[in-house]
Image 1 (cartoon, rainbow, N blue to C red):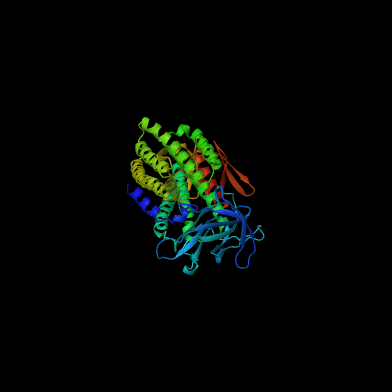
Image 2: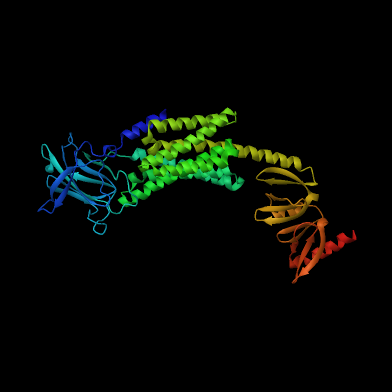
Length: 475
């Protein structure tokens, strides 16, 4: 409940220009001719639908009234266009340089504020004229102009909103780093998926806050919208993949492609906000369906995941604008952070169990206790053909053709292995019981094994290996 109240408070601080396109003004689109001080407009007709300057030069006019109150006012133009404005025949300012073509236009900022001096106001019926063009848009938008309005100056501060988004982003990036570390240690697919989910949500929080941080040029807005949709789509697909791999692994191969196809279909929806909302809702709905199946099967951990997803879906349906602007980041952080803590606890418990298993196995000198990502396994020494170094791990080559990674260094194993195992190369320890021969090759030697490929012998170890083989043959 506290999250909903907080979001409501933050939403109320957003500028009114972002929540209405025209504030009830009756805009007209006109033809224009140069004038002595201001352009002369003629052939004006009411604007039907949205104001759309994309790929053309547009002249607009409307009659407005001065806002009530004593505070200063400004004309706000928010959209993917360059613009310049006049009030009652006096120029207010220019944002970029509108033109008749891409060559004559200079791209302006996505958000522009034109302060209005008090002397320019008339008691009633003030005439605003706006010249706009948009030839440098990266993508074509269904609503290129988000708002044109006269409102108090300056805009209400969005510091609280940005702070909340950045706190959520920091938590998400921390979770992404934590899961990446866990993946590096254990190589588990779920850790990789959760790291990617947290990273995608954190990046989207940064992109969503970009408008409040930087006065960027309007072509950047198209790239920003595409990035937001791509990150939302990635989060949705990863969420489905994670929930399926945890609760319904047999169906993951079918659910992941289905999620990709459904999320890709959202690109056909009109408007990037709708594309983003639909992408998130598709991922949530599919994940909730999988969690519901898991609850029915009484799988552990499924009930809280389902409850959280259903709550997430409910807020998205009731307040879709909140989902895109803020609540998505809070929900994402609330999902991955508890999972990270649970994973850390589980890893600690696994390490304790592994240490106990290693302690129990120490009394068995005829076995080697192997610690790997899958747990602890006792391998009889007589089953080991050779030990081959692989950085901080070693590879055990066994008599049945298996190869097993062991979290140990070769130098330590050389000291622990009994007589009969000999270091024949800087990265190889051989079990002499399985050597069937020895041969020279261009000044070097190779051990011919009863099973598997020959093993290399270092030049400086040739004499020692030959003596060891002679001694073993006499025995």
